[in-house]
Amino acid sequence: MKYLIVGGSIAAATALNVIRANSPDAEIQVVADVAVPFYYRALIPFLLDGSRTVDEILFTEQPTDDERVQFHHDRCIGVDPKNKAIGLASGGALPYDKLLLAAGSSSLVPDIAGVGSEGVFTLRNMEETLKARDYLHLQGCSNAVVVGGAFAGIKMAEALQRTGVQVTVIEQLPHILPFIADTETADRISQQLRQGGMKIHTNDSAKEILAADGKTTGVRLASGKTVLADLVLLMVGVRPNIEFLADSGIAVDQAVLTNRKMETSVPDIYAAGDMVQFHDAVIGKDVVSALWGNAVHMGRTAGFNMSGIKTYVPPLLSSLNSTEIAGLPIISAGLLHTQSDKYTVYAETEGENYRKLIFDQDRLAGLIFLGDVSRAGVYTNLIRNRIPLGDRRDALIHEVMSAIR
Image 1 (cartoon, rainbow, N blue to C red):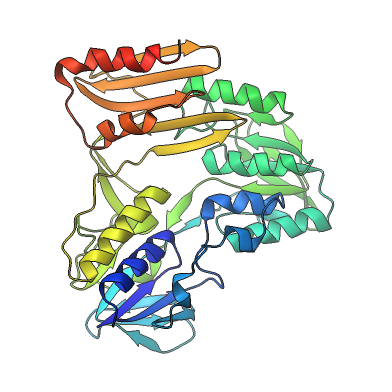
Image 2: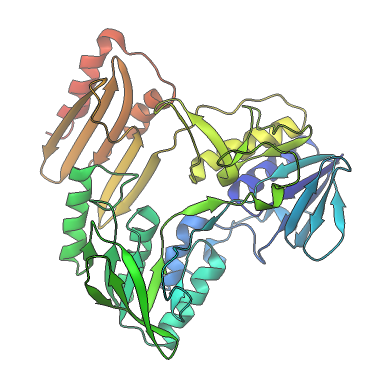
């Protein structure tokens, strides 16, 4: 059996490990357009501030070190299901019996003037981050602007601040962290970040990157303000890498469509990770979400089914985050914002602690814990599996809220 995996993502690595375990005699090939495929993407902000080296963010065991695995530093440019092969940017083709598409996503680049100036970066992967780090030090940058105040942008802004640079964050929505926090949580985190010296502009957007002699000097905002910047990070979102599937016959919408076994519409072709669209049962919509945990679940499911072991992906959430920002632990899951009468919201504050629960009748539909995040994993499981609580709902609310009093 010839297994072929496209991508260097965590979904690819997870599937590869499952296939290795279940098919010890299999021939496995990996194609990825990166020199070093498998590392902890969440740690790349620590490359930017120099607190971690490349070796320190690599997987302890590289799946491609296995003699049964052949790695190709190349780019897939097309899939030919009729001949069961993929085309490579370097020329030629690779055959497969089972194919996994796990090519991840790429940074969005906003269509604004000056975006091609020297000193402007997107930071989705290790290579981009290392280039920004080198520029930061070689140019002696003192002012940086991060365009985009979602989770990835804020983590990069914190990393920049740790280098001693004056950091300004621009977010077009009313508050930062719109996909992991509500207004109350975001306001508390913003206050902490500002106290640490970070400048934050919300309800505003970048209209032009200013430059002199080809190098960025600042950012002009929609409000008319100008912010000094000799380094600009564009952190405005990602898009799934699906362009190479245009003539493949594989069904796509916002991203690749699969069933719960991670099978695409074409036999023997599977997909996993950021390039897959899935149904979030809590919010009731089909979504694309670049969450590490979802990619692991998808990759594991694909690997088992490619190995002939029928497995179904568990329920996935488009919002599920556990992190620390400005020294404040935060866990959020499921539905975070609602104005609908369909849902009932309970929230309580005690000192630095804040907790919010959103219920869809007797089912927990969303939560936000800031500060004290104890037992959040237990409650997240209730959300993920849509477990009805019945007359236990009031007891759960009391348990959650009394824990921070």
